[in-house]
Image (cartoon, rainbow, N blue to C red; front, side, top):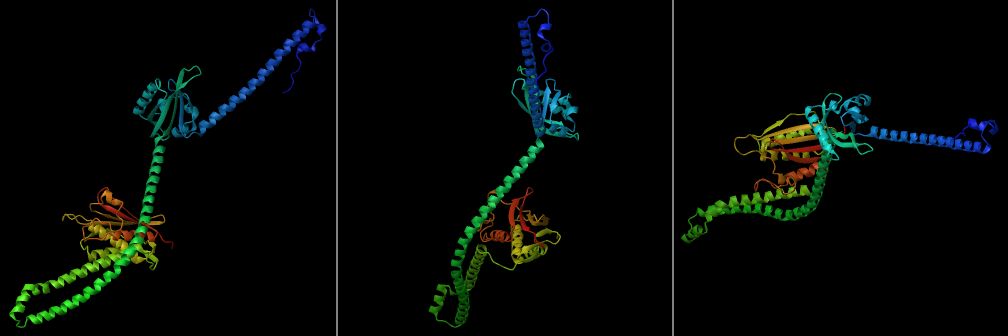
Length: 449
């Protein structure tokens, strides 16, 4: 800092001032220097405090500008004294235009006015109150805002106004919705991971069971076919024998042993044995398919054609009166095996028919839709059945789990379909529809052409 110039009195010789001796003059000069030094020191301190005050104001201003929450500082009469950029952007008015106006001018409806007045009343006895009010945004629409209203005091502790800080509820709702979607996606991924690991473990177990069952079932089938031929020959021989005039003891023995009933019942017994053995063979074949990843030809498959072929075969075979609603979409290609995908779709269509109402009045219906979204294609199979019980939804793809009556299903169809879809890099899921019935959704990645 520059040294201040000497005072006017210091520039005069002591002898020129009459009536003052040298000692008195020196004392006066000394006192004046002290006063002058004090003034200079006070000025420097004032400049430093002004700089600190300006720095603090700039810091507070930057904080208010950076806040994403709206801020309103008003006096006891509800007149706005300070705001921030978030509020200005929300209501479409500048800070200068808002300063001095009433908070009531920002409220969108009478109910919000009542809530605001009630909040002011409660803040006199509480530290703060949370109130939900509707502000009028820049377009004039009502926007719900969750505000925290707290009293504002001066240095003497006297309440001089209120501070309102809040955030539009729309942002909170969007954040909550995104969080819930992420949580649901995480739960679904966890369920699919657990199911995949369970299927892998079951696959190893089932492979061994299928191998052990295959040999004895082959023996049973082969022997039953031979027995059927033997039975036919024995029947022919006994029929020729019975046409002869047999002695009375042999006729009595024939009646006692019920030979005629035995010959009549033997073909149905053999057919039943063959049917049971063949059914067991089918189960073993399903077990093998479930437990092993069959490497078959992979090509570009057009899904519309596969769906139409599956509909034709199911209706022609077991469900001629099944009403299927299907409209061909634009050509949609995936990479995979056409036979395996046909098996999946036939299984889903057949299951929809089996789940149809049996009251005799309702026509079994199935709606099939094909849509492309991004890099994936979704096939939805929505039936008009009774839906799936909530406790069964998590087990519907488990092997050997079925809700059908005994003899109507093995519980392997959906498990095998689930495995095939996974091998194709897709997902198979199920849900109950609000209007009733169940919907299976098959999602597959589109092939790059």
